[in-house]
Amino acid sequence: ASLQSAFAKAILSRHAADPKDLDTMYAVLNYQQPGEKLAARSDAVIAILTDLGDFWRGLGVALAILPKWLRDWGYGLIARNRYRIFGKYDQCLLPQERYRHKFLDM
Image (tube, rainbow, N blue to C red):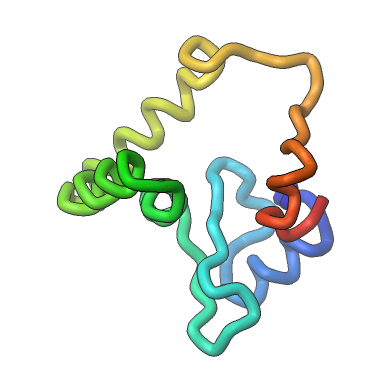
């Protein structure tokens, strides 16, 4: 979900995160379950990687071994250089129809 959406603002507020802080990504774990958790920065990346498949799960587990300060530093480095690394698009890419159920607010 877009961090500027009302949907995201409600989740961020529920977890005492500042909805105006738009400099990171979040992953909502166990959405609407008793153990719902909000993961930010490198913790969000690890949560996503471990849910993608064998190779990516292994990468997520390997990253989780590193200290959080080092993971977050690496996250910041990639975030600052993301356009050089991944390119820049004129429009926001939407996921294919078969993956849209994985997104909370589209």
